[in-house]
Length: 270
Ligand SMILES: [Zn+2]
Image 1 (cartoon, rainbow, N blue to C red):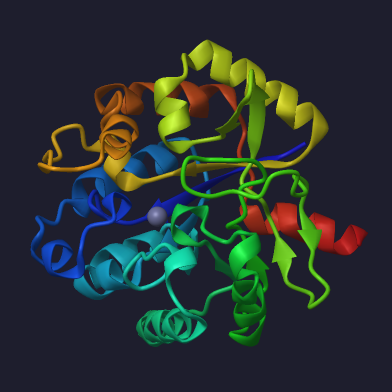
Image 2 (cartoon, protein in one colour):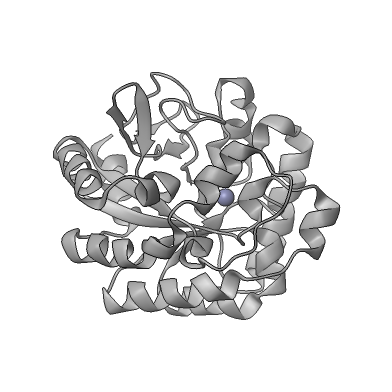
C-alpha cells in the first residue's frame, strides 16, 4: 500500500487556539520550518500536499510560490485556523471564500481541504456538504478514533466517498493500548522512532495511509506563551529538537507517493 506526506502549513501559534487579537500580533516564524521542510522534501524527491492557512498565504505569498514551484499540491486549511466545531456554516463559508480569492493570485485552484484540529465530527457533518458546494474534490479531516479534541469513534479508516461524491482520506492512525495514535504530528515526535516505524509498516500492509506534519515542528526555538492549558503545552512543544533527525529517518525508510495518485486509485476502483 502507499503512503503520502501532508503538511498543515500554518505558523507555530495556530495550533494553540489563541484569541484573534493576540494571534494577529504574535511573532511570525513560519519561514524557519518552511525552509527546512522544503529542502528536506527536495533532497528526498518527495511530492507532498500542503494545506495552507489563508492568513499566512496572504502574509507570505512568496513562500506559497516556492511550494507550487517545487511541484507540491496545495489544499485549503481555512483562513484563520478555527476549530470547526465552534463556528457556523456561514463563518466557514467566509473563511473558504477568502482562501479561494488568495489562491487565485497563484493561478491555481484547490482540490482538497483539511479542517484545523481534524475538527469535522458527528456534530458538524454540514461541513462536508459545504465543501462539496465549494467545489472541493476531497476532504482529509476526519480522525477515525478519539483525540483529546476531536475524532469520530468507529469511523471508516480507508479512503471512501460520501453520497454527495466528496472523497474522504481519513487521518491514518493505529491502536496502542486504548489510545488512537495518529500518523504524524505530536504522536510522531513523542513515540520512539522504531516503534512508530514498525506500526506504520503494519498499517501499510492493510491500507493506504497519510502522514501529517507542520512546518513549526522544525522550529525548536519557538516562544513559549504563558497561561496555556497544560495539555496543549505538553503535546505542542514535545521533542521539537528531535523532529528534524526523526523526519530524516522516516524519509530514508519509507517511500512516499503524491496524495492525488492514491486518491485516483480509489476513485477508479469505486
Ligand atoms: Zn492546523
